[in-house]
Image (tube, rainbow, N blue to C red; front, side):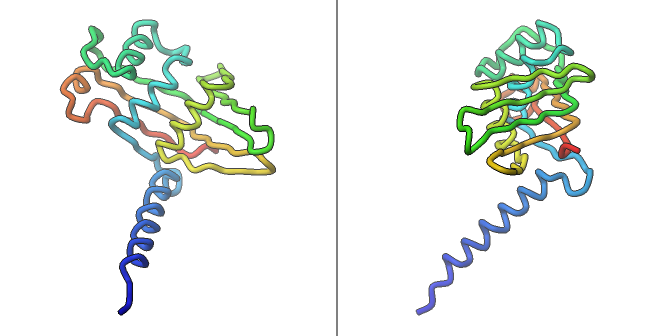
Length: 167
């Protein structure tokens, strides 16, 4: 008796995994897209750093990201970043940092905040890259639209992001 199912399951996992990476890499220069909870998470970790958002917009994103869908803020919020580059190390295991660029302003974060961004990029399908003990994840042209009115409906809609692989 031949057992072919494990081989087929492995093939299916490989194909699904490859398709996910191809989407995350943004085949060529085409933007990649994420939506729903992953998009809200990506916006949620970048919004507090943004000099482009008002205090009310930052507070609204924070409330939505903290599982409070019924917020007083009603207008769509656009969270953008020109470039995000995160680095960890498997040699210096204390190293965790991200540089987030908003126009000409660059914010550098370390520790748990950098770890949250790095992990959220991975969740969004940003492929890691490594060199000499370092692990990098980077993206460019992030644009997330958060619609509190749609999120309030609790149907999975209301958060969409596009981004490109970093140059």
